[in-house]
Amino acid sequence: MATNTHVQTLQVLEVVAETADAVSVILGVPDSLVRKFRYLPGQFLTVRVPNGEDSSVARCYSLSSSPHLDDNLIITVKRVPGGYASNWLCDNLRAGDLLTVLSPSGKFVPRSLHQDLLLVGAGSGATPLLSIAKSALIGGTATVYFYYANKTHDDVIFGSELEEILLEFPDRFTVFHRLDDHEGMPTVEGMAHAFRPFGKFDVYLCGPAKFMSAAQAAMRAAQVPLEHVHTEVFQSLAGDPFADIVIPPFEEGADSAEVTVELAGQTHTLAWPREVALLDVLLSKGIDAPYSCREGACSACACTLRSGEVQMRKNDTLVEADLAAGLTLACQAVPISDQIEIEFDQ
Ligand SMILES: Cc1cc2nc3c(=O)[nH]c(=O)nc-3n(C[C@H](O)[C@H](O)[C@H](O)COP(=O)(O)OP(=O)(O)OC[C@H]3O[C@@H](n4cnc5c(N)ncnc54)[C@H](O)[C@@H]3O)c2cc1C
Ligand code: FES
Image (cartoon, rainbow, N blue to C red; front, side, top):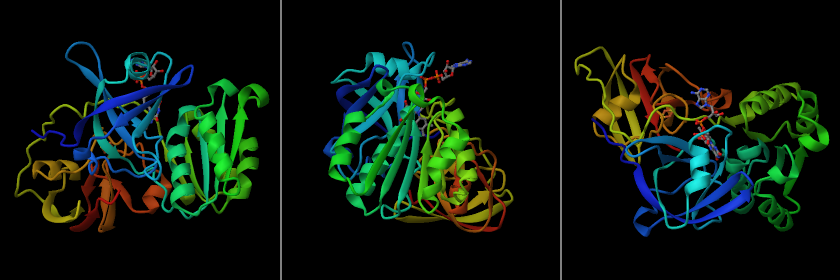
C-alpha cells in the first residue's frame, strides 16, 4: 500500500469571478510548505473535490499565477456544461475553505524563458498560458505572441490582467483576441495564416479538443515544426490519486533491467522487472516519485530518459515535442533495454 505523499491542504484566500462561468481561486501556502509548492510556469495542481459524504473526485487545474510574480498560487476553473467538479468548485468554494491538493506537477513548461513564444489558447486553455506569458516577460527576454480564441468578449478570462501586461511590455507582448461572434469559428486556413510568421517560435497550445486539433492542423499547414509545438490536454481524471494505492506484488528475482533514477537530488539504482511500470517500482521501494492519474493522462509523473530504451503502455499526454526531448511517463514506462538512466527534472 502506498500513500501519495504529495497530498497537502491549502487555504482558499479569495475566490474571484473572472467571467460569468469562470473563477480564479487564490490559495495561500504556509511557510512550512513553500518548498513543496515551488512550481514552474505551465504546471498544475490536482484538486480533491468532495462528492457526497465520504467520496471525492480528483481534477487537475493549471496554475494561472507565475512563480516570477505572484505571492500566492492561483488556479482558474471554468464551468463545463454537465460537468461535476468544475461546477462544484464554482458554486461552493469560499474564502477560508480548505482545499486538498497534490503539489504542482506537469511538463507543459517552457524550455527557456528567453526563446520567443507563440501561445495559442481558447477559453480556459488560457490558464497555463497566462502563467507562461508572465514568467517569460518578467523572468526572461522572450517576445510573446498570444493568440486567444473565445466565443464572445464576455467569455474572455483574464481580460484586464492581459491589458495590464500589454501596458507594461508593449514591445515584447502582443495579444490577439479572436472572437467567434465577430469572425465565426476559427478555421484551419485562418489559423495557419495567423501562425505563419511564428515558424521559429516555441509554441504552447491549450484549449478544447476540437480547437486543439484545428490548431495543430494549422501548425502543419503553416509549416511550424511539430517538435516546437507543446500541448496540454484538459481532461478529467478517472482514478483517485488521493486514495491509498495497492501496488501488485512482483517477484524480486523476475526478469529485470537495471535502472538508475535521479530524483530530488538523490540517485537510486534498482532492479526494474520487465512487466512493472517504473512508478510502481519506485513507490514499492518508498521512493517519493510524483504522480496523479496513474493512467497516462496528466503528465504529473513525466521524467527524462537519459539513456537506454523504455516503452509506454499508454500515452494520452506527451506529444512529439515531448518525446523528442526524451520525456516518458513513469506510470506507463516498462523497460526494453537492460541498462536505463532516468531523471525526474520537472
Ligand atoms: C493537466 C490539466 C490541466 C487542466 N487545467 C484546467 C484549468 O486550468 N481550468 C479548467 O477549467 N480546467 C482544467 N482542466 C480540466 C479539468 O481537470 C476538468 O476536466 C474539467 O474541469 C471538467 O471537469 P468536471 O468534473 O466539471 O466535468 P466531468 O464531470 O468530468 O464531465 C466532463 C464532460 O463529460 C461529460 N460527462 C460526464 N460524465 C459523463 C458520462 N457518464 N457519459 C457521458 N458524458 C459524461 C460532462 O457532461 C462534461 O461535458 C485541466 C485538465 C488537465 C488534465
Ligand atoms: S501520473 Fe498521470 S500520466 Fe503518469
